[in-house]
Amino acid sequence: MKIETIDDLTIGVRYKVTKQSDDETFLLNEIIERNDNSDILGYDAAGWIDAKNVEKAIKGLEVELHKEYGVRRILRLHEEIKKLYSDYNIIESDFLTEEDFDELDKLNEKLKEEKQ
Image (cartoon, rainbow, N blue to C red):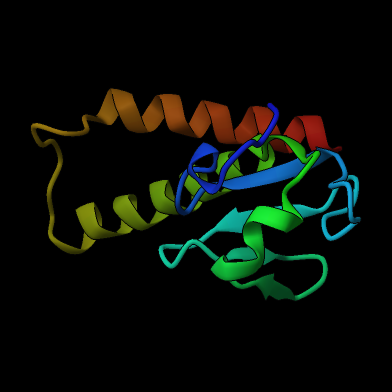
């Protein structure tokens, strides 16, 4: 996905750089994220580009969703939700059922197998 403006990046979503920016601010395979101030956080560089400098820094930039991080985050949230269900002795709700948890457990196992 080619990035033309900061608005092409969703706040709070992590992306992997697939084509570095023209000025090499963002390098190939770097993980980046737009924050709610329209700064871009660079996880590999452990820094950020201020919103006022973003326009220049993103020229030529192309990214893809960092799905591995998204899946890890979903699984972490899944574990937190399961703990809350247990802590509050809730078996089912209008949001998640035992079957939903079973599906998430299967996804988690599949991802663990793929990493081995």
